[in-house]
Amino acid sequence: MKIMSVLVTILILMSLLGNTEAADVREKPLSQQEITTAVKNLISLIEQDYIHENLSEKAVTVLSAALNRGEFNGYFPYRRFKIKLESMLFEVTRDSNFELRFRSGLSKTNVTADEIIPGAIHTMMLDNNIGYLAVDGDLIDDFWQTELDFAMTALSDSRALVIDVRDAGLSTLAFSQHILSYFLPPSQFLSKVSLAHQEHIELRSKEIENPINQNVEVYIVTSPFVAGAWEFIAYTLQQAGRATIVGKPTIGLGFMTVTKPLSEQLSIKMAYAKMINPKTQTDWQEEGVVPDVQCGAEEAIAATLSLISQTIPTQCD
Image 1 (tube, rainbow, N blue to C red):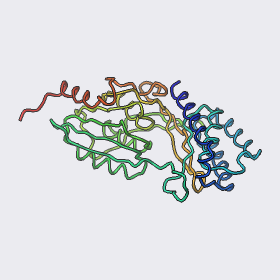
Image 2 (tube, rainbow, N blue to C red; image 1 turned 90 degrees about the vertical axis):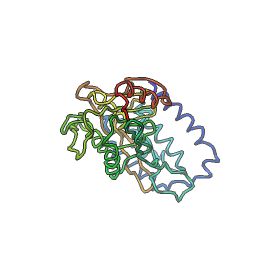
Image 3 (cartoon, rainbow, N blue to C red; image 1 turned 135 degrees about the vertical axis):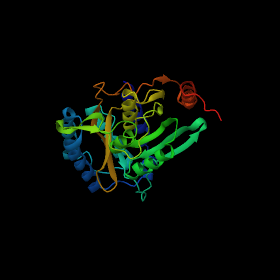
Image 4 (cartoon, rainbow, N blue to C red; image 1 turned 135 degrees about the horizontal axis):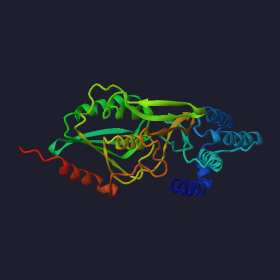
């Protein structure tokens, strides 16, 4: 499986880099108290929120045993702790979603923090009244819903709309629901959301003040790096017949992830929800969202504009 093989390669490279004495010297070690707190809180989070209940007990057992044996005692720079913890979790779960991070905004140590990638929403009106919306970086704060509202208002008169998510990063389930509500009727069943402890919720579209007209053709441009929430958006609109997907298949992560604090300086990203499409009764795990029109990510915009020109006649002056 492509995700697993990629992860193993990354872990090997990180191990080679993380074991050098030079890296250890440059990094300020985490305190014993912080490491212990982080591991104990991680155990609690896995018990409460980890989506894979059949693996949860195994992960908790391994972490608890390591903690009791003193495996987390001693000198632990951030990188070495990250490699050890992620490798331990992957070995028992084979889940590549676990990721230890330095919490955003902390920069007092010499370690480069795993910062959130700054997000942006760009809009442009192209020739022939074709709207263009591009998403960059991580959109995980609540205010991005307001920014999206401004962007959609600016593009409300578009004859066709191109949504470019090739450089999109992390997002949230709430933001996904918000953007989908612009294109689908209110209260439409978007997905069955499976959570830990066999809990389920139904995610439905909301009432939006100025939704995009159903006559406006929507195109979503993807790349092999598109993951998570943006895969959910693309897959949902594709299966609803509301969008044409152009580009390369996405990465194929069918689980929603969340980042939660573990200690003063550390946080963990892990899978907490699985999305099931009401039409297909499945998701895009491993396969990714397969475009309707496949082409290189670099040529995807040009290919999309060519498609639009074939389906929507050029306006005459």
